[in-house]
Structure formats: structure tokens, C-alpha cells
Figure 1 (tube, rainbow, N blue to C red):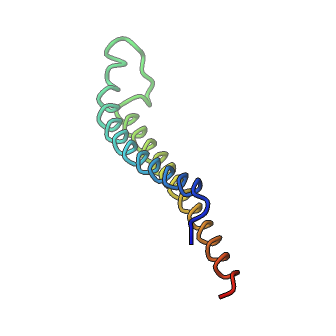
Figure 2 (figure 1 turned 90 degrees about the vertical axis):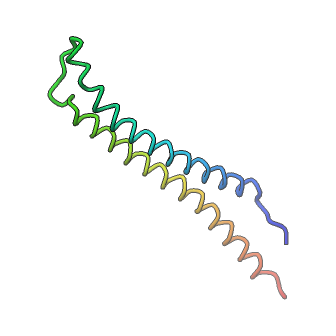
Figure 3 (figure 1 turned 60 degrees about the vertical axis):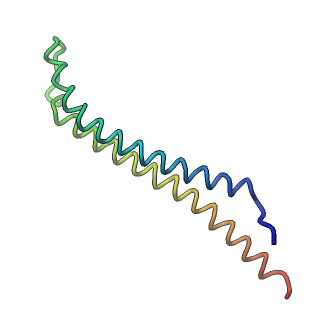
Length: 102
């Protein structure tokens, strides 16, 4: 029996690839913001820009965790979208098989 809806299967694969790309970039962004954000937060007051009380090294840490949370939500959303497409296709296949008399 031939597989139908090849475009939906392709979209599902693309969503999975995007999900894993987002996961990798989230981890890179998390560590980059964790190290770089905390290190670069000192330069604002050093070079004359008045820094509010919140703009200390903790700000870089907060932003790193924000990147981690948003990236995790995006990863889960794309992966869930890919899996939903595959579940709907499986339901369609099983319905088609059950409908045909043997």
C-alpha cells in the first residue's frame, strides 16, 4: 500500500529538524548569555553609561534562563507539531485499512 500525503510527511520531518536546531541553538545561546551577559554587564558603568540597579551580573543570568525557557517551549512546540501531523496521518491510514473489506 502506498503512502499518501507525502507533503505532510515532509513537513513533519522539517518540523523535527527545526525543533532540534532550536534545541542546539538554545543551549549555545544559554551558555553564551550566561558567560557573556554576566561578563559584559560590567562595561555599562565602566564606560560612562549609568546602569540601573537591575543591570548587574544577575541580569545576564536572568536573561540566560529566559533564553533557556523560551527555547525549550519552542523546541517542544515544533516537536509536538511534527508528532501531531504523524498521529493524524496514522489515524487516516488505520481508518483507510479498516474501511476496506478483506
